[in-house]
Image (cartoon, rainbow, N blue to C red):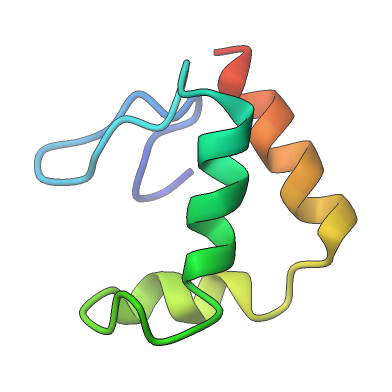
Length: 65
């Protein structure tokens, strides 16, 4: 919320996540577990504690925004 906005609307150089497709959002969250996007250090820290259930809930919430 601090970076992407309360409803994923994006801020300045941070992309909009709201209204993106759930499948895309889940795939991207899982990408941050690996080294496919090494420049996204902040996101690597955010996702490392997420469970599959968390990822599912986040993706569903953001898709609905």
